[in-house]
Image (cartoon, rainbow, N blue to C red; front, side):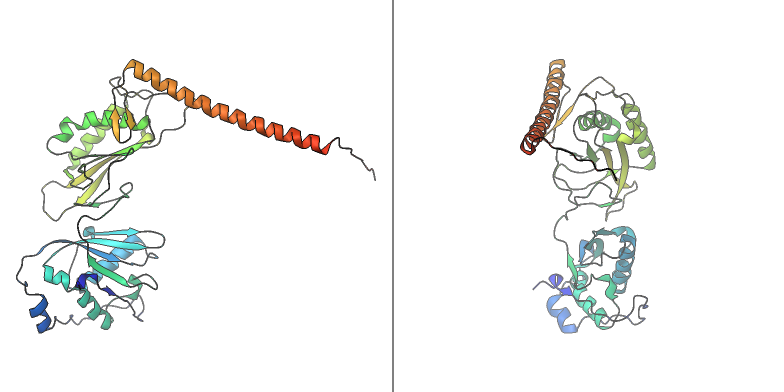
Length: 347
């Protein structure tokens, strides 16, 4: 049985404010080390650690702090930015990027059990009635809540492209060459549909890679996006889109930070009449089934407007039909009750 699949039950009676003990954790037994962990001399490598059944009553910063202290006492120090806590109303878990030898990683459940026996693990770290799960995440982990994230791990899996989500790897001279063209096409297409996000630094397969993006590159990207969208017709107001730069946590050192550029176009407000957005170059794009259509010809734009008017006309006809049915029902009720008399009494 793989020791990483073992779970550890946190049955501790000490209060939340208990301090950690000064004594160090005991080493693995000699026989177990010789039989199961014969590769003690291998070089450290990057791994993703999954920690499940965290207590959702605590906030993300508190859980990250508790988890960091726990791993440090388990002889596995990790930086705060390498801990990603995902919290929901009724559950929480964490993904931790660590660089250790595999034998150290494999011994974690045993070390956690030993620490539990020594009353070194706070019971509040685990959800009530749950056992703390500790294992190595196999392959790229899933993270579909890209909107609103403050950081991503390199190698994270964001799922597949959809009607409202477009991925671009952004390698090489992308920011200076192709970025402006993609801003025009995808922002225009999202405005003419139900909104969406353009993510630069993500493979078409959905894996996060990140692109080298300095603070100077961020400023240039902001100026570029603002200048392009100011030329759109009808006017695109600043609250219609959001441009953010999500840090990408990587185990390799780079001179320039890695980031994912996220350009989100919010759902356009309802218009009194069908209207198409066009770029600063007078082109019109549509988003259909995860692909871009355009630039549209004059005849295609006319057909789009005709289809939109037909949709609006269908809505009005359906509304009229409902009102007509309600009118008929009221008339039937009046006929069934017949003439009504009213007797007024004056006291």
